[in-house]
Length: 287
Length: 313
Image (tube, rainbow over all chains, first blue to last red; front, side):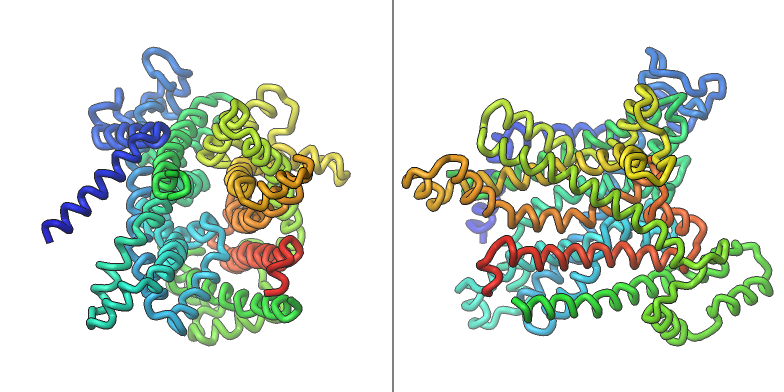
């Protein structure tokens, strides 16, 4: 048991070392760490209260006093971007985690049971995937009423069929391995085979997609909030800041430009990590 | 091939019916009472009851579902709850606008993405490759609607080359293309990033295959090796990606239409969601899903023409 734990630890340490060798993945990891720290310590890092209004400071362009300018209520744009990172990270990470917790076991069970169960689930997945992710999210948020928790739920549900597909493919090839046959022969339970033998062996492709989908979730949240169907003001989110900025694009373009840059940087960071893990796990690239 | 084609086309019917069922269930069960949503929480019980009766919501869910599917199968999409106009007329006038935006966006994505992907694969690890990869990374990370805002800011607000609101001033083709350019470019540049990345990695993989080495060894011209042995084989995953991204492109169209204030199905859906106009919401959602289903059908059928091996399987 101790030897097994040590070998797993070695494998993860090796994976981390390999990932850190990749310059782009390291940049992505550093960026995500910075964004996470900024989100956690937002009240300390932000120069102003993100909700504090000052009518005499309305629509001020960037200056030494307000580095990224102010919005139509005189609120500091930089402080709102800093607090907005919380929404993006919460939505990005939680929706992917929720989608993964629901989708991955279903995908593995499809591979495990096969036959009718697999056929029915995969047909449902095909049908659910005919909705574009953003449109599916829009439909669910509108049905549930737009707020932070419902945005997380809506994006998570739209990711479930995608996780089912991602887990099912590699799980199918693992199911053909001899050690699965042996486990079945010695009477191992379904739970034991699924969680101990299949799940650790398909963790790679799931990790890649999970990281890339955090980026997608951040983009979808921004899109939903931009349409006014996501996180509602006055809570700052990069999407609803862009919406407000779009309405003042002629007078105060900074209101739209800077929240957008925040979205691009955070999405880029998660994409870089996802690419890094993909390259690291791709045997062809290690030759 | 014939059997596969027929089976694949017939499969569209149950898929569309299932999509209609999901839309119905989400909007009727999860969304709560449309009558309250339309009239507001403080409306009197009598007016809510009257509206429920008018909308047929006082009937059982099964009965509502039955008449919804019956109407749908007969092509009746209902009338808007806001202005009583037939939903079909909205769809008929706006669907072509969204379709032209999506197709133009994908066309730009392919026209830029495929050659860029081939070029960066052939000049792997060069400066061109580096630039192409940076373009792809930034493109993958930028929401199309944000790029739209930036393009609008530069080309419409600062330079004034294009209109701020992308509506053609006359029905002429040139005016339409002029109004379409910026929204299609914002969608297309993002798709070009996806397509170029996919093309690059597939081309790199194929150009390293044994049959490419054999083709070179027997003295075939490099251009022919690249086109016949490399590019044609690389097309299959690229076509798949184009199919997959058509859905994402449509999602992007919802936002792009809003940014450019351009009439289309996406903008119609967003407006209907805000006003809780259920017949419009249901029909537009069906249109989005239907579009993706038909693109996937086209992609599946196209495989057979691109790769003869698939035709015989």
